[in-house]
Length: 255
Length: 296
Image (cartoon, rainbow over all chains, first blue to last red):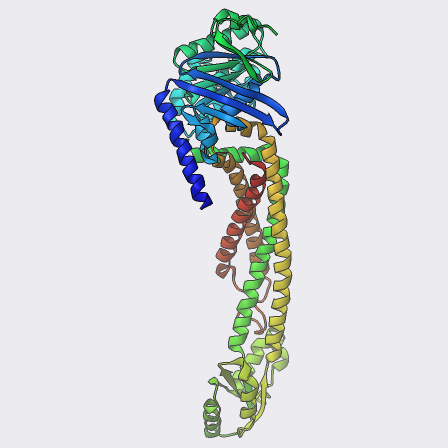
């Protein structure tokens, strides 16, 4: 009996999640009153709500401990919200079955501050690795490899090992790997944190270019100048709350 | 490149990354399977011999010298009428003498010159259906005319059975302990591989790898270790058996107590069992460690 109840609850919520995608199918990420606490003590997020539309370019800013990382963890369902709903691609992530999580994650590309490349593999092998993970065919691999290498400007460097490349180039490999599986959302967690300003600019240029091709982009960053310059929507967090959410530079917000 | 061959290669790469650990693991599995293989060989030989001894086992009823052929025929028909008797074979004095020559082989020179006096008696070999009835049948045969002595060799059977039991118990207990030990050692090696691939696993998770995709290279790694070890232990046992077989008494040609089976009747059993066990230890060993270490 209990099992049946559970199933029916799940079905109901799935339907409502589908409804969300039908009526608001322009939003690709939605946080509805999301609260996340750890052991009922540390409140990492406090009633956070925002919507991100398909094709948007968003900066997520705020001091350390303001909840940015928690948002990212909730987005890829590494963790679950204590309260509220996290909806990605029309799907409430809380309703995802354990076995569907990998397939859900394939729609989200991830780039990290420390690149997270495999250093015993070449550039091409790093990208192929991602494509093998999602079960691409040999033809798709060939095509996508050439595509993303060209996109990030690394054509000709496919047989280099990451250690033979500069930091900026390594981050571009990471970008290529994230994009190879054609995610609808690209999440970049301080992608330029380890790079010098000039290289950082190149990476941001590339992100804008990728965004222009239709991929939704969410960037967590401390690069104030870049945020100001690019003039995109900025969601600012502080102590687990959204304190401002508007288009513009750092939004006059300083910390 | 298919996903499977990609994952196989990943598993193989893991093996190379931890070469020394891989080698010591395979050595342990090899030793385990060697014991298992020796067990199979001994078990099969012992059972074959027990069967052979059982089949050959019968009573030998010695016939008094110098009686008429019709009396011998009569005695034979008497024995055949006893319940439980399967067959009666007559062995003439001459045949007994020849048997003795064969039995003594090289040392048969001291039988020379005995042909004329031939001290060996004629006899009946009586076989029966159930070894349990041996004593009852023996008593009945002893009462028949012209039979002066009835012997049977229960001692051989009992000895073979006892030896085989001891050997089986010893090998099964040592073998199963070794099997469990090797499973844990494999699982330990895989744990190490999982640990050294933590980065890969983390990245795979983010890219959206399914659990089976993440697990398979490690499972393949375990299987490769198991299969390679089982093949090497199979080869070792094969060579040892063939070499030893040339120097040991063979079934059917010996004194009839214990002989070894030719390897041609044995190798496929050894191979199949070792391969299956090698595969299983590899799979179960790696699955054991993965269950713990690859929780999402």
